[in-house]
Amino acid sequence: MRKEKGSCKIRLEHALFSGVLALVKHSPAWALGLQRRILVFFLKKGSPRHSRLISRNLALAFPAMSPAGRAELKKNVYAHFGRIFVEIARVFARREPRSILERTRVEHLELLRQALEKGRGVIVFSAHFGNWEWIPLIMSQRLGREIHSVARPMDNLLIENKVREFRTAMGSQVIYKHGSLRTILKRLAANGIVFLLIDQNTVPREGVFVDFFASPAATITTVAQLYLKKNIPVVPAFLHYEGEAIVFEILPEVDFLGDPARPDAVTGLTQELTRRIEEQVRRFPEQWFWFHDRWKTRPQGDPHESQ
Image (tube, rainbow, N blue to C red; front, side, top):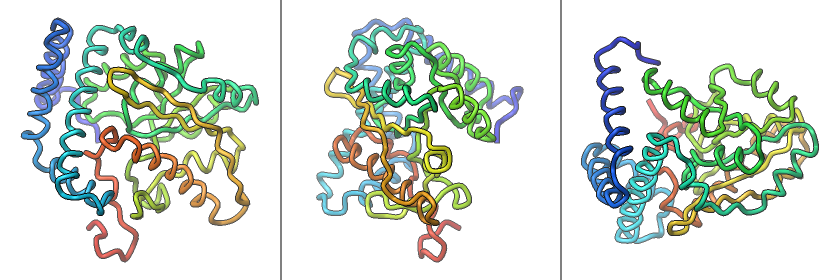
């Protein structure tokens, strides 16, 4: 639930947020490495719970990997997210995306253009991987049109207002998740692009269980249902880092071969979309958001079902 604007905690969080942005905005380029190291230190020491969660997630996803290998991967996860959080803060503070766009290579943009030519709108799905915040920016710049991003609002309304303003400046029109279906359909009817991230835990009433790293994960079905019921083109797209280069890959449009009228069609297609996400995470495992409790919701009767 959102917190009220006037609470002391909200105002303190907002003040700290604004102070960090001001610090990053006026810092010289040579200070970025130091800022990353400081941020990684606080990420590690400031939240033991998330440190334990990362370790548990990595053990579940990579059971055959040695403990030393998982420890090294965990170290790389922290390094990656320290890097992109500072990068986001710097662009956020300066409102200058040129440094991102100049380092970006886009692969197979023609696949997205071909999907748009059908005139039914396009759903672009991705994951909390690489740096998902830059995907609407890059699509907007390359296609010359607005991107409609479905997102959950932040608990702190003061910070949320700034984040929404930033995303709008970067070419993304935010659609808040709650009650979003009507707006999504309206944007698609106008041949718009709707961007969703579908790799976070959900409650059973809003999704289905599919395998993610060989373990059942509750997953939203919005993309699968729009594809099956409305025949909306669905295009996977993922952004990852290769050194200093940013690579935005657009993959071939989804072509579900199953019978859309089957009762298990939504689950089958959601499994296929999740499989594509898993493929990307396996390529660059340090770049997925392991801080998230992806397997929190358990199937009914599972011995580890959440209480």
